[in-house]
Every structure is written in structure tokens, then in C-alpha cells.
Amino acid sequence: MKKLEIIKKFQYLKSDIYRINEQFQNIKKFGKMSQLILQFMEYNKL
Image 1 (cartoon, one colour):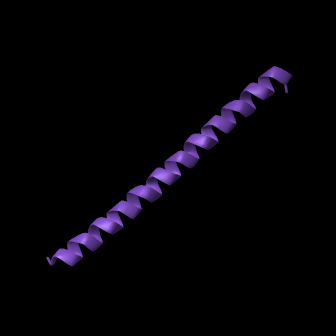
Image 2 (image 1 turned 180 degrees about the vertical axis):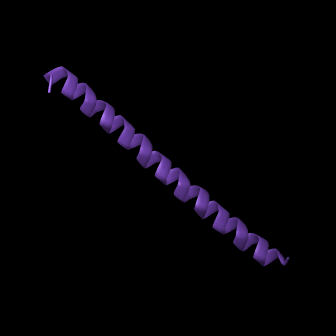
């Protein structure tokens, strides 16, 4: 494998990791939101 190909593969890998991390952050935000909603519902006895 040429050096350039290896660098390209690493860049793809980095962007994949970045995307996965972004998804994970979204899931965490969603989790926090749903927790808040549940607490709100409990509080208001809905």
C-alpha cells in the first residue's frame, strides 16, 4: 500500500469515528430529554 492510500484510509476512519461520536452525543441528549419529560410527567401526574 502506498503512503497516500494509508493516509486516505485513516481519514475515512477518522470521519467514521467522528460520525459515530456525533450519533452518540445525539443519543445522550435524547436520553436526557426523555428523562426530563418523564420527571415532568411524574411531577404533574399525567
